[in-house]
Image 1: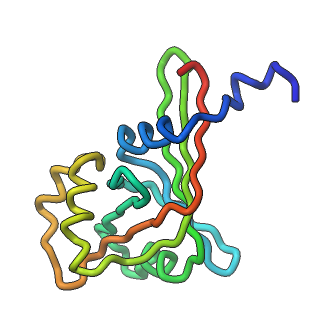
Image 2: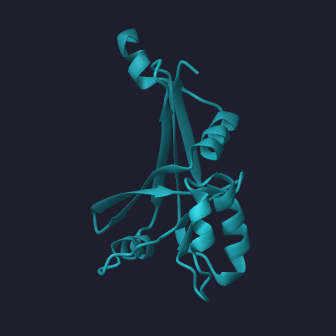
Image 3: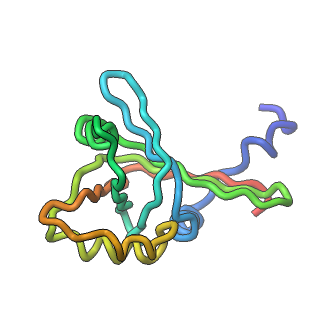
Length: 149
């Protein structure tokens, strides 16, 4: 590959850099697919610092599109990134199974969301339900790239 494209492609980052981006970002795009039809949705997320991302599905549409895709997708993918005005950037992609959490997992999810989700203060208004609409992506694969970091 030509060197002229290196600023566009970036270089691979190590595991600690992947964790750093997940901790600092707080928002990204969750991608799912059902029967070959993709669906990507921007979401705030919490990261437990190890192997799980948490998402709260708020403001569900009448057709419950997020929930339908989440329930039927085999492997979900999540992308987050940041770009500095000076041209430096870094991105992370993780993938794995996506499952709705049980009430027993709510405290762990809430803590992860409070630590790094975008506008996590809004979660204090989220009323705990017997079956919270919170989903966990168990990270099976992770990768990251960066330029100028």
